Length: 365
Image (cartoon, rainbow, N blue to C red; front, side, top):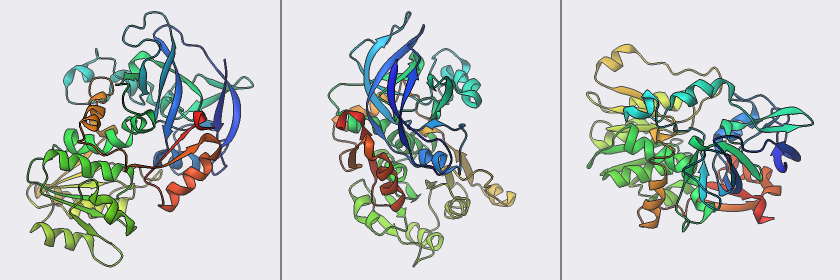
């Protein structure tokens, strides 16, 4: 079928509207009409060529929510008309990783990560789908294991955020770090991911939640998500300030920007003996984080977290239950809604720091 999509043809080039061919759903696959797609910094890193694992031309977008329009044979868990989120990390439910209860990194996903299949093409030439999704398109085709049915009473322009920034941030606090009641938490970078770490820490009952960001507007914004303290790193040494506020260091620190220098600061801000640093930001290709081994021997740990360690089909939909119950703030998270024709403007808003989450849609046009 023919679909409209926003395509980037080369690093640094603007997204342009193209009519692509989309392969129909085969056995075990689902056709989804994307009704809303959030813009993420990792999409921007692909577009800029700074961290670009997918070949150009590419349709970015991996935070998409929509409605099932058709299903292939042997699809049992979703039906036409269901509201769903397209998942970058599928959940087969049968491999050792899925059955372990310890990770969301399904073995099928790990086997495909280097060669994600794409259903898009332009004039017979493959067009990559970022993270295997490519949600800046009218329609996508996903395998059933990459489709999470969700409740229909949450607006899709809010629900889509659960597909990445909400799952990554909240999940990192609850499922990766296991933040406990009364903990001291530091969050480096208060964008969409960081503010959801703040929300996750609040849900866990953290006593002190410190945000570090260059943008002074993030202080007032962060307080709406549960922030208790704010540090401007241009005027204060964040590591020293965190140690002073917490009386020795954070129990948990999260890096949500993707810069090795901030990863090091986050690690140094944790408490000797048991501090845990969780790395969430995606750095530029080739960037490395250096740690002196003795610093680890002092009892600190460093953890990575991919999509918050949230299992897409069995755990992610519950995030929207938290929203429906008033425990998660998604309304203040989505600061801009734009038609798909203005998607380049949306990425510019993100880059400038004027937006928390921009959501775009062809249905808005």
